[in-house]
Length: 101
Image (cartoon, rainbow, N blue to C red; front, side, top):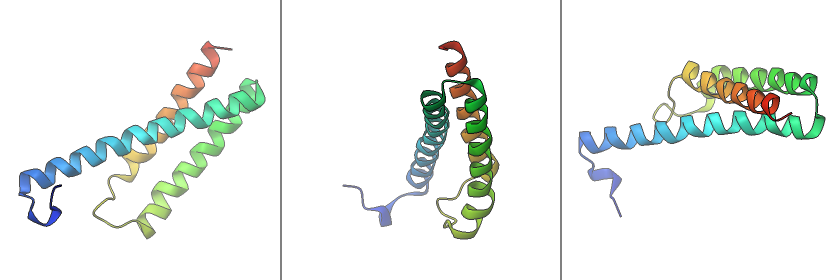
């Protein structure tokens, strides 16, 4: 097991980069899953678009207000990048729901 107190600067940077990659992938995955959930519930493009609007609103509040106020700086990345990944994932989910309608 790695002792986090004895990381070299290169190891620390690698750890931060890997954490950020996993974080961004989870932002995309949540966006896709939320829209597909709305699709399963509503079976309508209108319901999917309502889900997109709700998810975009939630993502904006979470990334630009909540994270800035409550998240510790060590794990806090770019609010704009996080928001973009969440909305981008939702758009992918919307595309999937339209293709498989």
